[in-house]
Length: 360
Image (cartoon, rainbow, N blue to C red; front, side, top):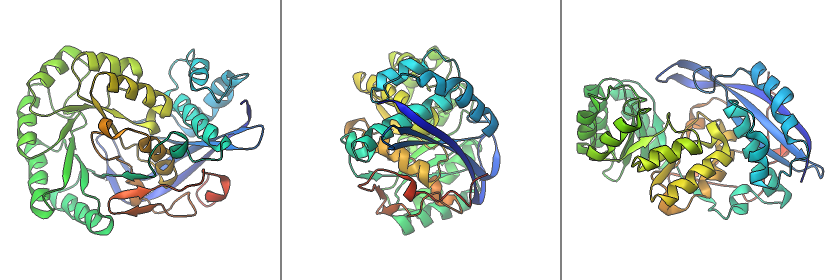
């Protein structure tokens, strides 16, 4: 199956509330939608999240990368062969977001060519349990937001953004335990805020609060330091920022990693799949991490989450950021009930999109 046509569209969506990330404060999200079409007119899609401190590209940079470098690599490539697409893109350095978008869109195109949604094509489930991400705010506001998501949507798994100081992080967790039912689950992501010297004490206190995973508690680029931390830690350390390639995953797994974050919105379904395969070989687990997706990106990336075997799932998919956006690129709302999103039976197509009022 050869590429016949492609397009890249850009859109922005305001947030309901200001979002405080570890490295930025934002009022809106900026997104790119890649469409790949075959000679029969079927299409595959991928959404990219454009943030200077995340993906490191602007719309103009991404457009130029696709036009000048990435799309020409697909000439004569059989898009129905995952490895052929990966090989075609492998000689190009950097451009992680663009290459990942191509691999994702190619996989959805293969499913559309079979007239199937990707979750069915990949023999996955049509229902995916999801988690809500509590971004940095006061403990009271974080608890109020968690209660809202629990009561409105039945979400009972929460990624808690830490890094506000150890005592503040613990105060948030205590308040969540007091306000929510005992069956609720928690990951704490400190976004590498703490030092390696502070981290053992931090991990011990998180474990005492019933936290299941500690994500990036400190910078983890040093494998020897990570290996020592994980060996002494009372809970698994979930690796995110330092693990974006198959090679990264292999190094961390060799060093004793128990859980890796895979973000198809950041690295594409192809690289995420290769990381997941390695993780399975080592008996570790994965999560499907947040990349601030819109409802459209959520629908696309949940197809990936739906194909993950239960035994590899460390935590419900962090794919609910779209609930904090003021608009959607989808004509129909995603079906979220009892803490899970129910995926549609038909493949994504142009009739499902409403981009005109959001595009720029």
